[in-house]
Length: 358
Image (cartoon, rainbow, N blue to C red; front, top):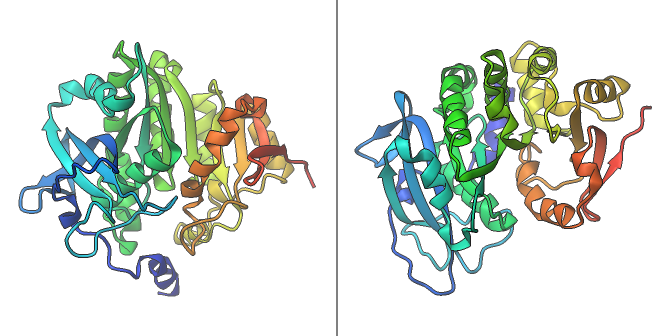
């Protein structure tokens, strides 16, 4: 009970309900907009016009356009309190259900304001445990807005129970969703107008990402893996021994697969207790020679992000703060970003410092 109480602390405020998905026209010239294609195997709820935690036997595609308030603060989601106000809140301004056959073309067309000639890169966000649909959608909108991403954003929304008590149910939902994520990756990789595909998984969503990569490799779909740009696992909620077996099958990626870890991640510490004291991948210490050997042997980049501020008390969502750091790192064309190994991120200077064994 103490564990569950702690996990619930960040969610003490009222969680956003499906009413935040109501369309609110916003024609303000001061607003900025984010267009997101959502691919989900959640079941659509006709009454709420949202997606529930029930599992759908088929994928659904819907396009959302959201406006970002002029007063938006970095890393925050300004949720509506009462009637949505585009001047103060993130709001949905357009939404349209699309046929899943349009997945590749719809992704490229999303956010057409910044559309560049030729191929367009795509970033897929796979949310973590205890997310409802609207939380995952608005979180991706915030990440795109704060990071100034040119990639076409795609949300893969799997049927999380969105409950502190739903940890085991969410792990089952990950297994249920593996084939669907593989299908999404194959579909996007087969579209000539899609460029590189970035795959970003947070927490339990990282487990889904790795399982999908493993399945692609086992079924000989190497061409899809070759279309991937960055694969990032943020605070991965994965048993360390299970990951070793998974990465043996997947093999090195180019660029290297990136792990964002922090030994003080409290949510993963509790996750380890819930899973029988099994150590989680996201709490690895980059100073540990065994971690450095794992990184170098398998061509992995492990980054300690403990110095990045977290928006919650569990220290489990530091990836949100990285949107202010990564653009500067890429702008400097840091050669370390394409190297395997163990590193410590220094967020103020936006540099990676090689870790050294104790």
